[in-house]
Amino acid sequence: MSAALPPPSHRPAQRGRRLAARGQSGAIAILGVFTLLLALTLTGLTLETARLWLTKRDLQSTADMAAMAAARYTGCGSTREAALQAAQNVIAANGLTSGYTFDLQRGIHGRDAVTRVNTFQVNESESSNAVQVTLTRTVEPSVMAAGLTSSTSTVMKVTATAKGGPPQASFSIGSFASITQNQANFITNLFRAILGNSSLNLGVAALTDLAGTSVNLLALQAAAGAATIEELLDRQVPIDELFRWLATASPSASAAAQLSQLGSVSINSGLKVRLRDVLNIQVPASAASATVNINLLDLVQTSLLVGKGKGTINLGLNIAGVGGVTLNLLNPPKIAIGPAGKSLAGAWCTQTQSAQMSIKVGINPLNLGLVDMALYLDLLSTSGNLASLSIAPGNTQGQIEVGSTLVSLRLRNNADTNLASVFGGLLQVGLNIPVGQAKGGTAPFKLVTTAELPKTVQTAGVGSGTFAGLLGQDTSLVVKVLGLGGDLLKPLVNLIVSPILGTIGALVIDPLLNALGIDIGLVRVKLNDVESAKPMLII
Image 1 (tube, helix red, strand yellow):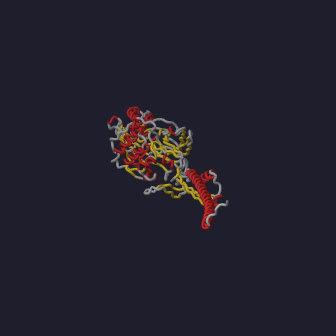
Image 2: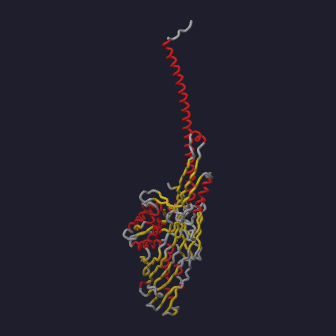
Image 3: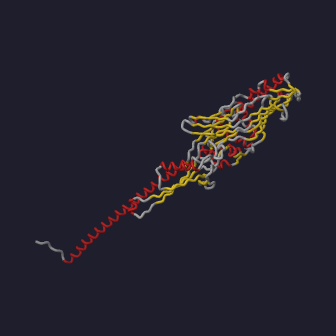
């Protein structure tokens, strides 16, 4: 029996539903194809974007490393050619051999005093302290990206700026490795005389705290609130404000306490100082010069002498038979911070110098007023130049070349117009002491670890001794009677004068020269710190 057919009125509707179902299936298929193509396109674009991002990241990393390598070749004695070669070596080592352009500029990194935004000013001279590297590379689209889109090649340009410089050292003429009571007395009285305040009380322990502590310019910059190291160096401030900066920057609480005392007693001194006059440092400062350590006692003493300036300083030393001690400062000392070697013009890059001065010690044996006598010590400035510096783990070596120092001792009258006189001019007394001269020489040094710093190095001189020993010798005096030979009275004069001269040598002359690092026939140099070049990216 055959199945019953639907009524004729229902047949067109059924046929329409079947046709609609077929149409929907076709639309879904087409939509699926489009969705698949869209997914493939998005995947391709995502992969292409990731590929370009990774390529640019690698290009930026190469530029960063090239800038840091080239930044070592800035500052005194450096050339653009050396910086360029260092950057190119890094680029090649990173596998970038073709398809790029490369530009390098040396310049000066700074910071805007108002906005505190980093700045870079092109300067291809030895004054540079930073390098800017620009890498440009054309990247072709991948096969997938080229097939899915009409993408063309992409030009990538990256820039990196780094601040650097060669290894540096800080050093000064002199040594405070071990402070004696006599040296402490001299230094305290010197500080009191410069500040005009007798209430200052610095003993051996206090000075040892200062001598055993160091600060760096970066910490001082923060303490002073300066935008840059250059701004810090250029500020002329009251000496008490400088001491407050040092106390804030000091890593030692005991040293900070001594600096606070110095700040308190120096408020009314009227002294002002610029760190640029205290430190012999190339500006703009390099990355290494900002972090190399400076000895606090060196910094305090040099700042006081610079603030005082040229002129006479009366020391209140109470010594039996001494009628007063006067120091005439001709040129203040300077502390050196910088790299080794010479500039392209042939001048030393980094140089320290001692104070140039003369000291007068009045002599009044037994306080009887029978003599018109004073001992004069004249010191020419000593210079030290950093000739070489090589920093390596366990083997840091260098050499400081020292200029000649002439020491002159004279026994004259108080007006310095003639020989010293005794008994109203009946006797004239002079000195006959062959004082050694610390001629130009070298002071080499070697460090296994920075824990050895600060370190005293010295020239290989012609011999060493004390002025107290020389002055106390019977043969050191020349005695004349009414302008003629006085051999008969010489024993009597020696009996009175020689012990006093020996005392002056022990309590005044030797402590002074030890503080300045000068001895008979040699020069002492205090190597405070060495700092390897650590280039840093400027963000």
